Each structure stands twice: as C-alpha cells, then as structure tokens.
Image (cartoon, rainbow, N blue to C red; front, side, top):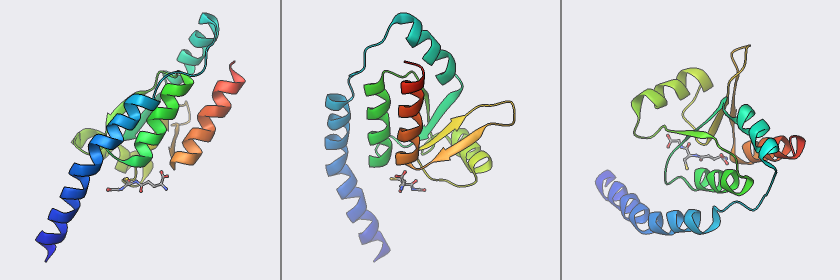
Length: 130
Ligand SMILES: N[C@@H](CCC(=O)N[C@@H](CS)C(=O)NCC(=O)O)C(=O)O
C-alpha cells in the first residue's frame, strides 16, 4: 500500500513539476526598475541572504518568482538534494521546512520561515532601499 501511495505522489509530482517551472519561467521577470545606485545598496544587503528551498515546492516557486520580480539577487541552496544545505537548515533554523530565508548578522543572524513572511520582509526591504 505504501508503495502505491509513493508511486501516486511521484506521478502527481511528475505531472505538476513542468507546470510549476513554466509558471516560474513566465512570471519570474523583474517588474521593478531602480537606479544602479539603489540596486547596489540592495545587493549589499541581499549578499547576506540565502534562500533554502526545494526546486519544485510551490511555496518556494512563489517566493523565487517574487524575488525575481523585485529584482533581488539572493543566493539559493537546494535543501532537498544537497545534504550539506539540508544539515545547515536543520541545525541553524531548527527544522526542515522550505522556503527559509537565512539572513546573516553579527548576532548569528536569523532564519525566516514561511513564504508570506519572507515575501513581506523582502517587500519592506525593497521599499526601504528604493
Ligand atoms: N506555510 C509554509 C508551507 C511550506 C511547506 O509546506 N513546505 C514544504 C515543501 S512544499 C516542506 O518544507 N516540507 C518539508 C519536507 O518535505 O521535508 C509556507 O508558506 O512557506
């Protein structure tokens, strides 16, 4: 029975994945235009950020699209297949849940979970550093 359930979810993933990635490709275009100086200021801040994610998680796709729309340069780590990234997420953030935005800081930084919280944080950052 477990094998059948696993096969079912594998099939669903196989069908849904191309649609998800096409959605990301189509929707993930910058919609915000800013001066080179403003982009530099933002790049300096986002250099300290890393998005831990799975390639085909819908919440991660949504977050990646938003990052692209805002024109932010944020490094990503694959916490599904990269065992080192997965271990970092588990030990730093406390749980395996994606997306999770790691924000480096002198005090050890923070691990921000929940796609809506990540998007709200990045919206506020982009608005502040306009
Ligand atoms: N409410 C969360 C949901 C995130 C979520 O459910 N992520 C799934 C992947 S789609 C996850 O991290 N699962 C953990 C795992 O598969 O180990 C959000 O919006 O970020």
